[in-house]
Length: 229
Image (cartoon, rainbow, N blue to C red):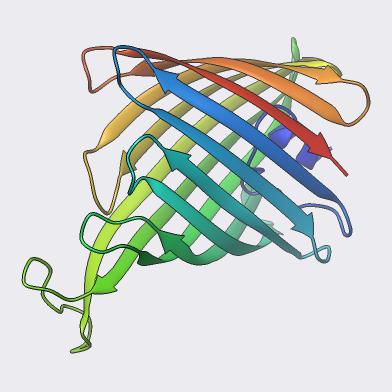
């Protein structure tokens, strides 16, 4: 029940793991008004065991250096003293960089999620926090800063808070608050309300809006789909 509650209409399952042998693949495309850019993403997860989920998180934007490809592993557990469940993950990969052709990425994360019943249906809350560390070869613009090695380190973070409600086994509402302080680029704070609808027994399609809370309320649209295996 927990995995379906947390991830039926969205891509990442947050604190919930995939069941052993289960997998999912999701695609999304975001576009902002007034030439505010666009971003296309692919995301996948596979339950390697009941305690370990592995996956990929990749995407590309409008700028030549706006891309990333990260492989990750996530482990989770429940605690008697804390409602819901907690998961920790580590991701490694590569991304575009304005300082070099490619930057190495180290992306640790921590998630907490909790599902509960309401008068309108089952609901959930999920909080994801990730650190984003870019490593690039040192240069005059980016001098060495990493333990004396000829590498420059840029730091960032992402925090996502998601609330969701299952209206029925085939329909779902969600409200997401996204904060990002990237390793390179400007900070962003966005509100993303969305609705998801099940197609068949394995698929979902999603439609959502985007409100940029740091850029004069600029608006955008996100379209997504996913399939479970």
